[in-house]
Image (cartoon, rainbow, N blue to C red):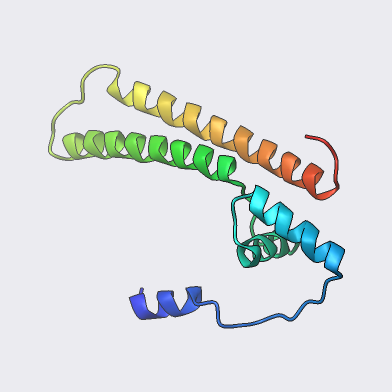
Length: 131
């Protein structure tokens, strides 16, 4: 993939003009601050979630996903080492393959559960319900 094309696709050069009442704008500023986000990032995130493009993620959500992603990277490294060993004719230690698969399944299950909970929490917050 052409790196310059990738960077160009990430550039935020389109502008949407939106009008808010003073009370609405104040509520947005408070909510953005509570989410530890800039006002632009907060509105963009909610808009993208509403369009079904990506979910709204708060600081805690991003932290949890970061931990789960790190776990998946570690498991991927283990599986790569096992595959390399097999490819050069070495037999992996007993249980390594099963353990790595079990670890991957556990992290994938936790990730699926966390994403479902994030979606539920996000929708409840958007509707103004207590979470």
